Length: 209
Image 1 (cartoon, rainbow, N blue to C red):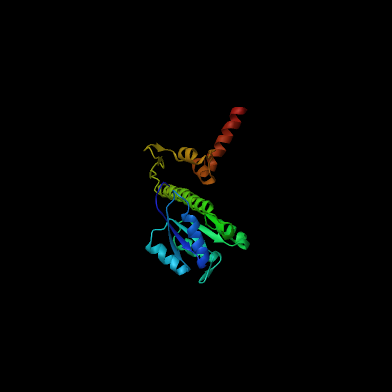
Image 2 (cartoon, helix red, strand yellow):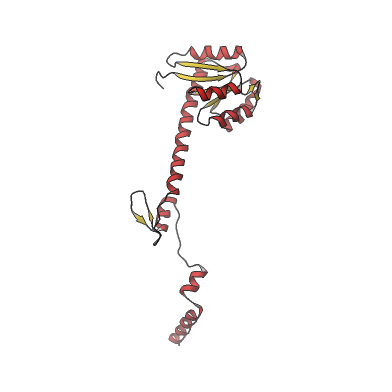
């Protein structure tokens, strides 16, 4: 990250915990951090609207919100900002559930030191960046697939290089599917009507006799 100033939104209603977290995080040299501290979920949502925030440090127990609902509210409001959950010693199970619902990491308040806080912030940034890149790439793939050019006459598909391929060839190359050719009942009846099949059978019998 170099010397880029990181803006961290600290959502914590305990003044002592808030001061301690800011103090130990800013002790680390080489990682300039600017904290914006609020003590309500409503204030956090407003701050996310008005200020460019790099990471959120989020206490799940706030005066106007409690538990995983706090995390869900932040993520629903801004799905791209990485979130590190702050938890007490007896809330580790809740913190693990928070990670499964989209938080990038969690910190136990009673075990904090300056290196741990900064490392968690940095890892959260990197993981969220990778996740957003993946989501953007998948969205682009879906967009391209939705606009897949297909000939209205011969049904060939144009690939990304501008070449036209048969449908089964294109799908085989891009989806790893192998085709076995056969005829559906409707096409069988159209191409080989019953009387034609019967004539072919009679012809075959005569040739064998």
